[in-house]
Image 1 (cartoon, rainbow, N blue to C red):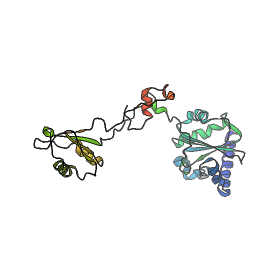
Image 2 (cartoon, rainbow, N blue to C red; image 1 turned 30 degrees about the vertical axis):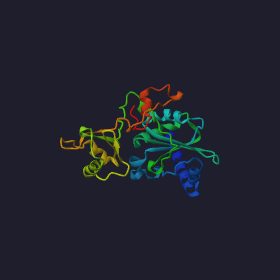
Image 3 (cartoon, rainbow, N blue to C red; image 1 turned 135 degrees about the vertical axis):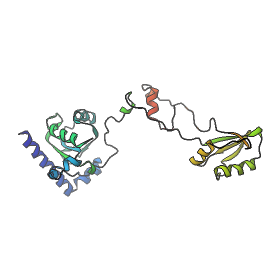
Image 4 (tube, rainbow, N blue to C red; image 1 turned 180 degrees about the horizontal axis):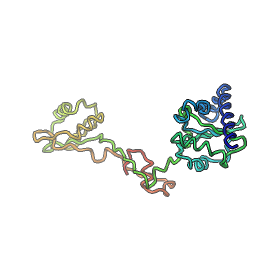
Length: 267
């Protein structure tokens, strides 16, 4: 009895998908709710192995409108890993759509076999398996566990420290000829853009033009017959120091605040 009801619901959703495709409903959803285009149903092509191959998403029609994304995820995650959820409401039609993409086809099939008995099923509730490749990504999609990478059980992100941009080349014996220095550096690291080389105390201040010059300056040989005693990254020009102040951040540990910053922020 239950299986007959599910098959009937699948045929109704398949008919709904065809009607919306021909009447332009999918375009209306896009304009009003930024919903995905009408996805292809797998129920009619199961004989060709469609379900086992690509049907990793679930469409639910007439979901109880009182459910939040978090509540929906709590109900669906028991069937597998939910990658995204999208709710689409249209004020001009008496129903809504809920799309869920699972990690695998087996998880999606397991979900479609059981969701009809869950409390989110409203009046006229229907389900169908879909091709996820036909459901375009949206910035408004709910991504479950988006912030869980801050938990203690995950491996911390490796922060990519950019190479230095400013270097100081110190003269041997504290003195040197700026013209000779500029010609020497061009031979060693290539063309230096205008204003990227200046006199600087007992040496010269140099800003590399790209990452290649930065790497070459980091390994510039300073032999005994060289005019430079040493070449070092400038002690302060290569980073900025400041204080991020916000009362909203008081409840978070420093490690989590750092994780939310760009990779160029070191501590």
